[in-house]
Image (cartoon, rainbow, N blue to C red; front, side, top):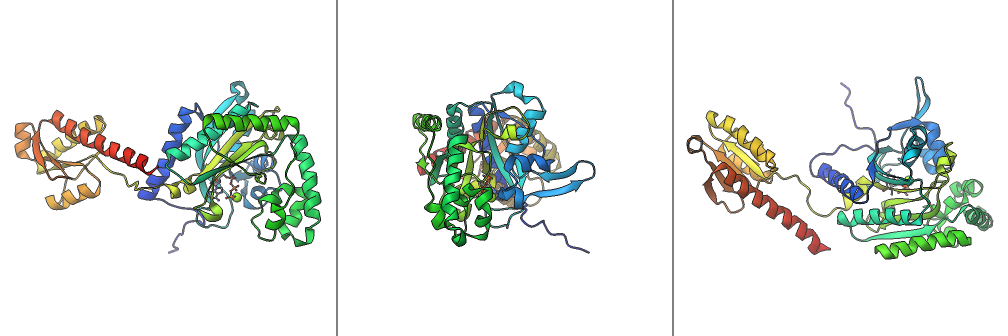
Length: 426
Ligand code: ATP
Ligand code: MG
């Protein structure tokens, strides 16, 4: 029989790896609530034009990386390579304009046809945050503070926020012309890709990873800002200072997508090589109009969940609070009742109902249990539970309420140790 393999560049996760992934998502959900972002859901696929139009035909994603196919009735459709385009399409077609300015967040799978390697997959997952309908530079600041707090709450250190402005339409057009002039004088020395980008999108040469392009990209002229663009950028920088978010100016930072204006940023770590960008975004005031909607300012960011998960410190193996070990048939029913009561009291637990006692104890300990609740005939009669604290080996007979109390204390202590341990490292 044919043996099925996973599609190249996809991952299946279990255990610690899956818990890490989930920890990133949970932390994102906590922090987005602190910043007052509402959750949204958008489709996993859209008409191909949604991405082609919004990301630009000449972008790497649209020209090389999309998973597109002909559908039976909808023409060409594409699996989402990112969230911004779909959220913007929904903003227009679902009447979300009435909620503007809209602060939204989501997470899920994204698809790009790339060469798979560490930190780069064909199905990967993003966290995404957008504010649609505000041209206030303080909104950019709030999004950056959100990203920064997310990273610090995940305990990810060694990250630099690189910040730039792409100016307004006027400063950007002038810069584009200066770049074309600069790169045209070195045309023959550029990579083939960049020679092609020269007319279509010279900004993207700055972003090139090809070593042949780097010297010319690094010596390229920087943008001259109009007074208005300068003012906007000044307000973003002052806001970041006020919010205590540190940044490094990087005049050559450009975003791979066509619709960016003003603020552009990347949080970069030195730990993942060429896959070092963990969270990136910027202002895209021209996008919603490009999709046929009303002129609408917007700003947002996306972060790669797998890359963040790789940077987490510590062990994320799931641990239970209590293991319930019934001895004998009569105790099994009571075991379930006790377990239900523990869970309702907010404690996690598992039933280890069969096998030798020693074996069950070691399974309990492998599952991270703090205590084993042992139930035998004597306990049933006395209305008590034997509670064995696994760390010390101490064992005592307790009334059910006292057992819950004891295990709760242990669970809180463990929680505190985890939290304080994280603080010490910072
Ligand atoms: P890169 O320069 O690494 O290709 P990008 O500019 O294409 O990144 P964005 O479109 O800004 O990436 O996507 C936002 C984030 O999503 C990235 O910073 C990264 O963390 C993550 N990401 C992008 N592509 C992939 C991928 N193929 N596999 C895993 N994560 C990815
Ligand atoms: Mg890419």
